[in-house]
Length: 147
Image 1 (cartoon, rainbow, N blue to C red):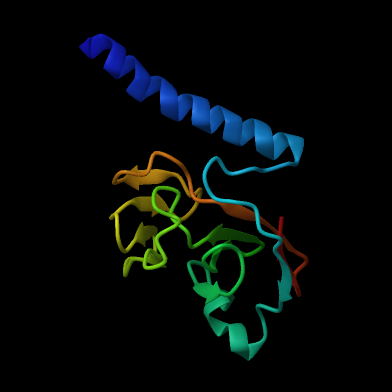
Image 2 (image 1 turned 90 degrees about the vertical axis):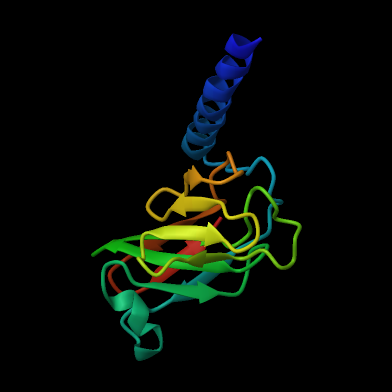
């Protein structure tokens, strides 16, 4: 019985990650738990209003998505954008994904799940699914966040 449980614990994340990769390659990303909401906005990271995004590791919160969106600057021309709804308890209106003080981990204030800011994958806690991500496109002037 323990072997069966162990196999499930190993296979489930592999299957979920595989579906995640396949959905990215196919261009249609559907998160397993968080519903789809139209997102399409543009910001100008060099504008003083977005000063937090002017340096690597900078982040800002935006309205939109299911529970808001966090945008993180990975490097000069790369950004990551995730919905602030936790895949584990996204229907809880008090659960918000927020950046930890170290600037590398996103965590859910209610269930305690933690996620890697670079790829959205879970690090600890009850969530076994990655954060819902949004596509980003940066041309050196404008950053578009969309799905």
